[in-house]
Image 1 (tube, rainbow, N blue to C red):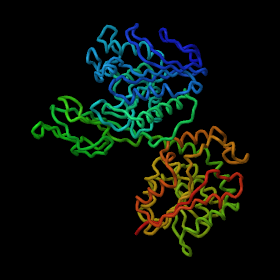
Image 2 (tube, rainbow, N blue to C red):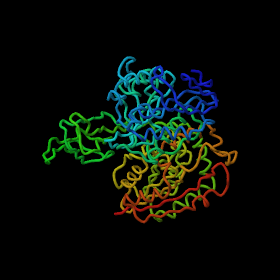
Image 3 (cartoon, helix red, strand yellow):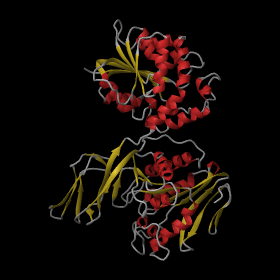
Image 4 (cartoon, rainbow, N blue to C red):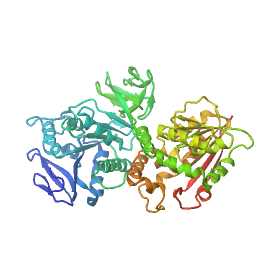
Length: 565
């Protein structure tokens, strides 16, 4: 359909710039469904959002209701069609998540049948009347009345590569710990939509026939972030607590006997191969079945009711794959593009009063009067590494970005500094335990997908009583795409707005951006067993005395911690 013209679905219309709620009719008039259409004045794609495919999954339904109320028409570019309850009759008559008249599960019969049962006819009508309008599709679910689950998202995995890749990108925007690539093409609503060329996902959150404001707020925020990512909603993405890890080889274990179900775990728990996950017993306490893990993984959902049915679900779990996380590739690519300007900036900074100021901050936290072996992790183009080498220390710099290491070596040669540089991941250091007297870092932890893991690694490579010194800031509270308050010659203005927007986009994919810092860092380091922890919140006032090209508008902190014996 034309994207900035009148929206039409049967007799339901919405003009450009109009947000309209009411009833849409599909299936040649058989089904009337509650819906809201936001038809933006600006051209764009059409996103279909549905809830209530399973009528007892209330988090999805309430989230759709709230989305319809809160999305602003003036921010829409294209069209957003929200169908609040697809399986309306089952919902209104509280008949569970199967069709009211035929007892058929709607999410198992797509593409449906024009002359089939009521549920099959509904599936057929959804394809013909709704999927035909959609460029993207988001289906909102939760655990059924007997299911408990950890929040996660499915994305359609059996379709053209471009469709699957786009669906995965949509799933990545959800603030959930896990995402699952669907391995089927038929039956499910979102699976089948993908075979028609529509990138599609299904969000799972909540369960046990209930809902609460926290769950609906989170789902609503997920959808908004996806709409922003697609360019259909012209707003800034919210920060998240999670970046979803890929879960593969999902095992859906059903019960061999009807009986009483006693789970040993809860959704979200990590499990090991051979571990007992639960028991099925009879009324007299006799064990009918032992449910064991077939492999290491994470529990996605399980039956939360006391009874299980013969052949019915007990538990579902899958293997976690960290190989599909492309954030480090994006981070490396971004800093590669900025490595040249970084080298220029650090070359100038080495010969400015800024170098002396930084040395003073470092020296007051390190043992004096002896040569130290120091790791500068996330060294960039080598500023700290070179400074420390010139002070007579054995300095080693590491960075994940090869171009940064290349620039650091060039700069060290220019400065005649005797130091070493290695390409290395700050979260997976390739050094033996107890190697360094000190680990130092500047403006790195805010860029890491797993900062806690990095802190653990830095502790591992420190010697007994070694010093960790981290200079960073609560950058999650800043908007890098806004440079209006910076000097004209500032680095952020020189690299351009496109580069700063890319940095902001990456930042919002990192959980650390949602933490309150340095409070989070203090708690994390304390839990890792560091001692003599100190924080200095006045760092920026001593370092950034002038608003020049080096100026950092976000207040920095220094954090110093000592490793126990």
